[in-house]
Length: 318
Image (cartoon, rainbow, N blue to C red; front, side, top):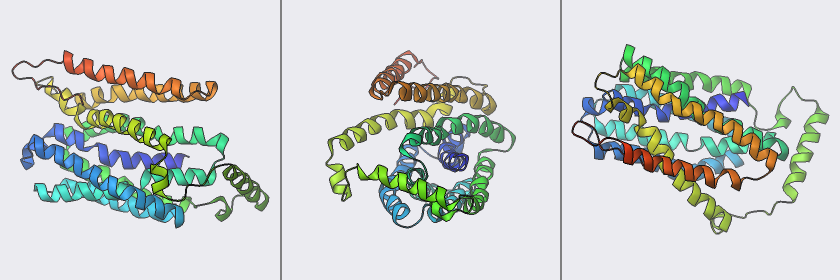
């Protein structure tokens, strides 16, 4: 799981650090308007949207190991290339490609976990994977603030893209797609684990294709919930550093980084507590809709309470 955690963290790092570049002056340096800034954010998710299912198909039918190895090199390269762009079209192309190569990460990781962990273990494994989101933005906020303060936004992109490329080769050496491919498990252990995984699949109704999945009421509800959640989360991730910096004329990027990290520290603690409590009570609904409601009300409250006087930006809480 540490390998999976690090890999997903690097993916989230290279998609989230753009928000710090926006606060640090990339918009002024490249002449990016608010409309173009929104378009750049949309281009990343456009690539992410179209290539997530193809990536999942490749990971399931071919190899998670090969797919993530290639993606690590490509997204690390794209992240570093962002630091040398000098015009908007080049930046737009890089953001789209970054979305394409990162699209396969989450489904590939879920497939990898299902190949290695039994049903009783999978909840904790999934929690550890998704915990990479807040933990990454937590430390990335602080590190990016210091990098920008010391070098600038261009150097931040270049430096933060390098670890993904280096980690690609660590991933290739350390990871195998299935338990049957490793040498550190005895043959009896491999057989016992595979037998249990196969037995768990027998009671699950097979889904023949994606069309059948999309007609499922549960899938539709989950998609709607995740859609609404993503609007708030990514609006928060992409705009928080800029909103914080606009609140103080003399605020440096180091201060912005530390302040931006605070919500993600709270999120990390909450995820651990909620994961434990939901497993203990075996009640997922109890920990979904109340927290979404609290988050939505907090967004509305922050938007209504933020100053809108001259010199202060109108808050974009969505």
